[in-house]
Length: 245
Image (tube, rainbow, N blue to C red; front, side, top):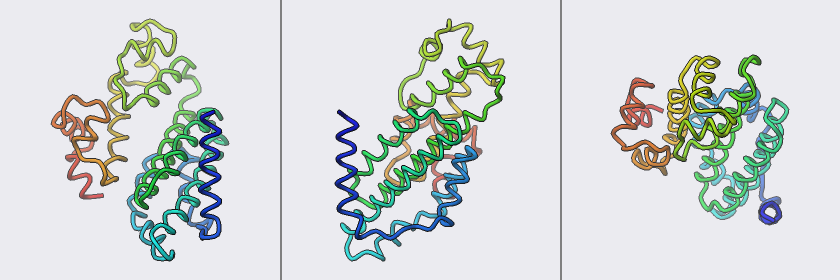
């Protein structure tokens, strides 16, 4: 039923937007395709920064702001479908990719501001690129470890205990922790932190989120602890990172 509602919403958006839309060329989107296909999530972040004025260009070629929103929704929904299929072609399980696509398209359909659509589309591209990256992990890594990695990726905005991760793979906590470290070369806690810092870098590009909101969203105990962890990993504060990019 939920998929039917999403499809209906998408069809409404497409019907209202189709006549107003102008299309982004393949060459203009090629960098996004290449980043997703190679699993290069950092490249998506760089493209987000490089193209932050794109919503303004959408507005300038439209007759009104509401018309620009409708046109950009249509463009974003088309791109979301393309990104989804590309990720499947590069190893992401189809139902995982479809679920990501549906969630983002639903949010795009409800967005009322051009920057919101822009950041939602880049968020989806970033999410899919990271999933592709996981499929490129050394083939010697067992399906159990891959399950643990996927569980962590799916729950970055929720509390994650080592027991939760172990349960997702059907392993004991001790064995799961040992196996994870042996195969990936980092502890489970370090991997969780690295992934959350990566997600924080994406969120810092969206002005809608304050440092405190990002810290809370990604389950850091306080903004100051988040800032410390970010500085330790990136060599600069979250605010400095936001300013520099």
